Amino acid sequence: MKYGIVIFPSKEIQDEANSYRMRYDPHYALITPHITIKESFEADKDEIQTIIQELKSVAQKSKPFQIRIQKVSSFFPVTNTIYLKVEPAQELIDLNERLHTKNLPNNQTYSFVPHITIAQKLSDDEFADVFGSLKIQEFNFEEEIDRFQLMYQLENGTWTVYQTFTFDKE
Image 1 (cartoon, rainbow, N blue to C red):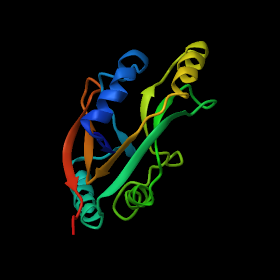
Image 2 (image 1 turned 45 degrees about the vertical axis):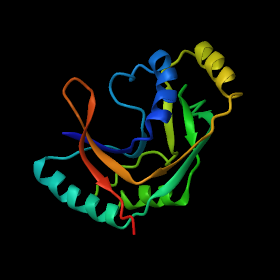
Image 3 (image 1 turned 90 degrees about the vertical axis):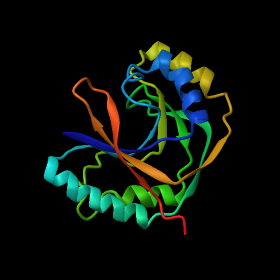
Image 4 (image 1 turned 30 degrees about the vertical axis):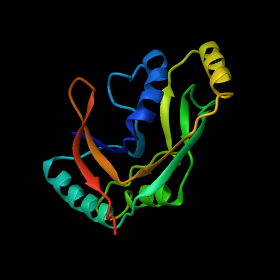
């Protein structure tokens, strides 16, 4: 089965992201707006139990932290993907690193760029138009993150929560 690890932002940020995603993201119906902190990986029933124990340990060693979103950015020229840029807080970077050690699959194929995708698979002209208008807009979101979710992919391609891991608050 295919799994991934994400952080879901607040409903306010999700609503903002979805206002663009419903028009510009063909994956809109497959998963709620999120920050991917571990790319998808394959695991069987036995492996996932070991991974869950490791994720519990990672969550217990993590403290809540703030994220900030103030603008959009893109992965152009690699892809025509546009995203809400999550400022790379050290705690978020550390969390990503802890999710690629010990009993967890070390499957990171790209450098970690915290973001929430709002548009992807656009034509070159559409990308230029959409990114041109969005990059001049200001966004002002700041919130505390205190959990992450282990997701799994269903046969129809949608993703759903398998388990939530809450950070240590002390």
